[in-house]
Amino acid sequence: MKKIYAIKNKTNGKMYVGSSRQYGDNRWKTHLKILRANCHHSSKLQRAWNKYGEENFEYIILEKLNDEQDQFEKEQYWIDLKDSYRNGYNATETAGRVDMTDEVKEKIRNTMKGRPLSSEHIKAFSQAKIGEKRSSETKEKMRIAAQGRKHSKDTKEKIGDSCRGKKRSEESKKRYTQMVESRTEEHKLNIALSKLAKKDLTVNQLRDLYNIANKVNKEEYKNLEIEFKVNAQFILNLKLKKSFSIITNEFDKENLNGNI
Image (spheres, one colour):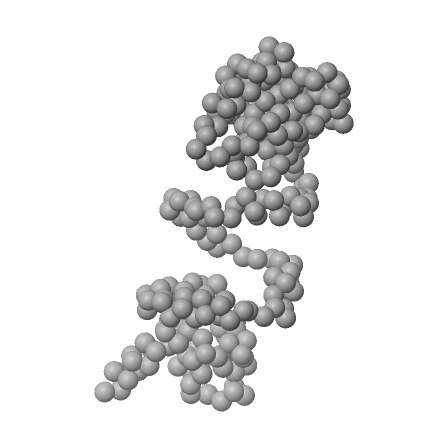
């Protein structure tokens, strides 16, 4: 929800007036982060903060706006009403977004390095993202950035612990079934090839392993484990078509055609 807020000096009543669309008091937390890093874009507010101390400032909501109201028009109204440029801490006379310089961004980044987020902060950030739709360009950038990324052993254990014992609701099961059934054969093949790449196996290696596994007994899997760097369960699942069946089905067709 849009709102007009102020950072007020409790000692002298002077204010910094701003506007925000952010959830809850996230905007105030952003200001706090910058002020504590001693690099706020308003040098007037930063000097006062350093002089009077954090405990002498408070964050207050001046007005809550509906979707139809102009955010910056209202911000301008309050800047003029409180005279927060001439007799306050606003850096400019007019309302609007103030972009941080690269130098300021770097100072904030260095200040925040290694600082863990509180559960309250994480929850507020999550709430702010609800309903947000990513553009196709953003999705593509995320896809490229994630390529080849592998979870550490510690991360895998945390994921496992968080999921262990968790039961899916009937609605969740239904959605998952619909999603799987809607996948095209090409999509399924791409998923299988991606999993294969994570095992450091090529399609040709998988073909060789599959064909050999179908000719030997389970007791002879040890040599295959060493040669292909996989475990016995992987070989068994491959043989029983519990994994990579979309690829091994093609191998069966090749073998059949070769025998005709």
